[in-house]
Length: 306
Image 1 (cartoon, rainbow, N blue to C red):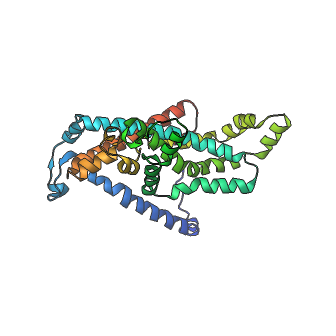
Image 2: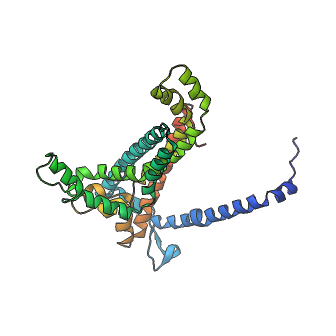
Image 3: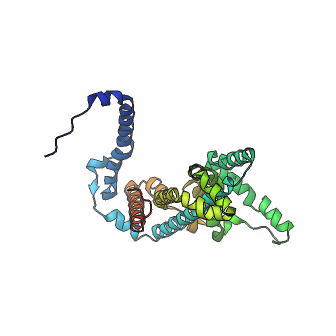
């Protein structure tokens, strides 16, 4: 039988600062991430705030049945999934492309200026971003003026009155706001690639495109896979602020997301149980997506989360 390994108290004392900080984060996670899960009980109750969780009547899966028989919620799932997939694909690809292109800039000063400018929009609130979008895309905005001056349009278009324009607008806003910020981790991964590989490729006569294809992309493949798996779980986090701020009655059928549904039906209508059920559904789907994506990556021998 193997002997039990004795606790090395000397090593524990030596690492006490790290252990204390780790304990702080564990306590923080328990208090703010795990204890609130107790509130999920509301989804199985006819919850009344005056009675509280313990005195409210249990109704089982009735609230979930109400959700999945509601045409509005089914449409909201479609909107959330569509915008989530569009945002995932567009922002993910653009961040990788931008990082690779920025890495090809040879002038260090220009590279730093471009990178700084690119990630500044990340620090703007969605209220400001939505205000900018509204100003440039309304009937008297700069986009309509340019299109009319180029004789592409005969009269201005109200982009926020046509449902077909809303999802591309959301995708454009996410790309403009987050591409520079998301590219930082890819740039860090690119800098870890051995420079001798590029030197050897240059000696062999490889051009820039060949270096990108055979050195840069394989060099950041593991980073791409890990971030892709993590982002797959956020597909249903398509957003709240931009859809809520730019949405209106004319495009409501395509602008509402699960988060807006929870706000309007769970909070505004005081049906907290229904809102909690919608939130549980969103979390469950996110977990399933991560597990499936991770299993597929494992099956094909790619990098995975666990």
